[in-house]
Image: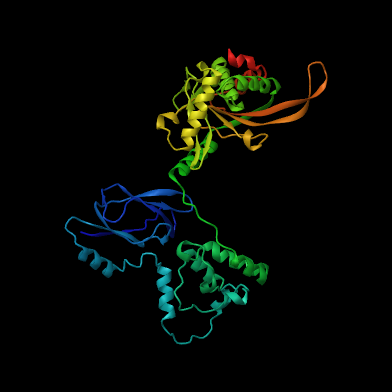
Length: 429
């Protein structure tokens, strides 16, 4: 038989949730345990897995709608159900009022009847005083009979502060008034009437739905920062000799070499020479890698990708340069295979090309470290003979998982990395 799906209480004490996106469309078949939609609360986005198999007969709310808990959102029909059965079910259960909350119904009932006057009661003294709102907002003590689409929280807040929802600009889907809109009115009224009018006249912000990649990035980085005990080591590398060597290579070779390519090569050699850094943490044991696979952070339109340079320690500088350029281009084009960005034993993130002098990156678990590379800057330095000269310096910050790498090991690795950068001929051996 046909079944109505209702908005679940996806979080404790939640009164409403947002339907982020439908995983199915009308006419699709769905099995028990299969996801029909992504539901978002203030704390998380979860999949709504159905407990009834059948065919999606009707989707009752749109993507982006805020729906009260328990409100109908879809209808699933069985193999013997007809469209007439679905229509009959909707009419008898009032399922077409999917986004109308119980608070809406109560307001409608009150506005449509004319109760006898009641003598004032001392209880009225305990009600909150109306917030002084500009005349343009038409604050009133009674509920208007015009239908206003608003979230349950927005209605409650407006009722507490005697604000007419009909005069509030809604920034939610299809002009729905949400909690933030009412808070703007309260805040503006408390400051000044002119400020309130100016605030309400501003266009609402644009909402960009989360992609699966962005959710994955957020989940992994939150997990890393909250569960991995990071510690950080920073030092400056003198870049004068490396810049001169790079200029010579690029003047004679068709394959151009970037500063980041040199950083990748130095990182790989340092991990080979200090293998205690080329590890990963697991609950059962510390994994020690026999090859150096470097994840390179690449910014794309959809989010951060980390294509991997496999066995980087055994590749020449020119080979690394060619592979890094190819992998970055494929990452930005969305053409990477899963085996080309999953895994890796260490990461490198370079923001020097954006003019960032120094930063600390978040570890990509289960890896034990990530190197953050800043821009090359000119500063006065002291030469070995005691002369003060203008030097080319680059700050590098190593983020380390203290569960599997101690401070002394990380310091030895960073020192080995700087030695390679400052003596760049070793990158060619």
